[in-house]
Amino acid sequence: CAEEGSVRPKDGAARTADDSERLEQELEKASETRELIAIRDELAARAIERGVTPDQIRETAGDADAANALLGLTPGEAQERFERIGALVGALHGRYPVLAEMAAREEPDCPVCDAEGLALAWEHYSKTLPAVLEGSGALDGRGAIDRSGPFAAPMRPPLKCKMTQLTIGFGLCSVKSGGSMLFYSICAYGVFCSSCDGGIADIICP
Image (tube, rainbow, N blue to C red):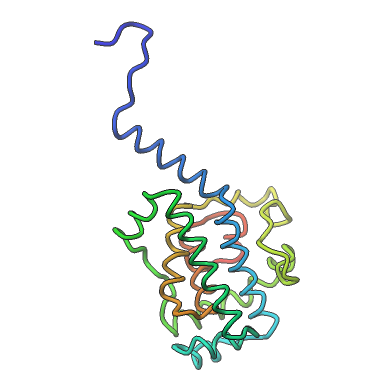
């Protein structure tokens, strides 16, 4: 048995819990995660600025170029963003191999992966996102939602996200988007809403 005062080695379950918590913390701080969020917000801001409607989303389902045109993106501009998202997800998977293993082993649910689901989700997000994106500057193309801004008010619980689930979900949205940046953005908000509570999630999510 261990001598008095000695430190017992942690068992496997404790080590696994510690590793999972560390991964969550590192993903939350990762520059790649923040950029993925910024791209999502920039794309949504474009859709809001151009008055994209749920019916337009239904009409362009399965046609990535037509959907990207709704955002004012040329095929080249959309491809650049699509490749950047893939590079960011790939960088995270490369740094944290367990993340890639989890993504391959357990494909997360995709809350809004069909045309009707996307349209219905956008009907909601198009009403709740403008104030949040304007408050963050995203509608001016300046980046992601500012968690320290007015939506972190004391009367709201702090934003809490399952970062592993969120990151894997962003990758899933990219794969399923077929190059449609409108699909990616709405899907990524769906992943956010299924992975986060409190803070701006209470404002944005259904």
